[in-house]
Image (cartoon, rainbow, N blue to C red; front, side, top):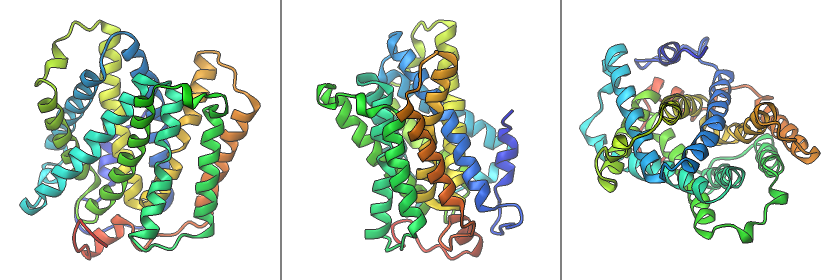
Length: 333
């Protein structure tokens, strides 16, 4: 059973990093767990949409529940993680609204308009955007392993979701556009989350991202309106799952992964999500996996293994930069 307390305690609360405990392999493990939880969350959201819950309601429910739960947890476990410098409020406000808030809405809106497989495929264009940013703006040099992993994971994801059977041109245009925007906002969230963690603990970054995103969606949508609808027990169960196990925990794990292996490797590793969704559908819904889908799953797994062949610390990993007190600012390298 996943113990959120142990995960939080594994992150350093001061400026020193214990390398014997915090290893790159732990970062991959965090992201893999996040991908598994996200896979269930996507199908859960589709169920809620089909039962009458709107995108606006679910976004408000998801972000508000997550922000409140994380605030209470940190307040009880480690209040120091709630402290930030006043000059960084603007960073967190922009990160929460244009990163977390926009990412949540565009992805869920895409799911509500097109099938889950297509929405996932479009969102997992994000690793390509992240790599493009790292090369063009951050001046990072990509290893051959990373390039091979990116190409393999992207094509593998295409096969896993059965995109070769999808008639993209016949799909809802607003859903497709929203899916592409979800990839852009997810990439933006990953990149700028990495910047924030150069100074702050991953759970601090996540809390303020959720806080400002929740505030945004309680302004755009009538405050707490979504909580006053007559949901049945099953709907409430999935709403709570999405808020905690589909958002709070996996986004925390994902940022924890970026903290150790950076956004490029973390985003590529997260392409395990569609594989997990496919396996869940095979086991519980008796959906048949076609040979090409199985091939795509193998290709994604091989790509992630390629990423881990050379296990070493990236000198720009937020955990190392934060521990050395060499972070300069949030807006540049």
